[in-house]
Amino acid sequence: MRTHRRSDKKIWTDVLQTVLQRGCALSRLQEIFVIIMRFDLLSDMMSGIKNGDNVGKKEVVIPASKLLRDVLKVLQKHEFVGNFEFVDDGRGGKFKIGLKGSVNNCGAIRPRFAARLDELEKFEHRFLPAAGFGLLIVSTSKGVMTHDDAKKHKIGGKLLAYVY
Image 1 (cartoon, helix red, strand yellow):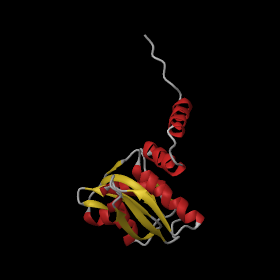
Image 2 (cartoon, rainbow, N blue to C red; image 1 turned 90 degrees about the vertical axis):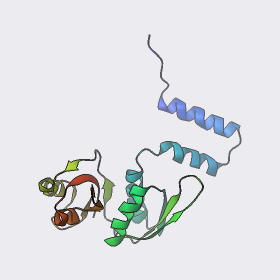
Image 3 (cartoon, one colour; image 1 turned 45 degrees about the vertical axis):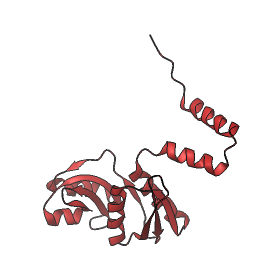
């Protein structure tokens, strides 16, 4: 027996009609869509930082997680972003990230490749524009760090993101 699946367009149309019938404000509707659409918080954060820098924003607000906090600390240490603060909104929290305008490009690496120490150079050539320019962010057994720090500690890990 074959079941019929509704298309994504039909689902979103039904959600929109339901919300409008109940009289929700437009800001609440936007919150509902943001909650529904979050699948990969790291890629959402990186694209938010890149887009905010491109249009000249001073800060962006993104949902919070421990991994994002660790990645933000690395980005702040290398002066790609300014100060960031955690704002408790009663659900999961958010980060307000101050932008400096120094990001040319950044993004999350999907799938999260496992990179041994001797493979890090291969991924540098793949994701960074030039040698010694930009960072790969790696999750290791000693925490989240850059690929240069991972080489100094002589450990590999999972690739999370790139920035330059």
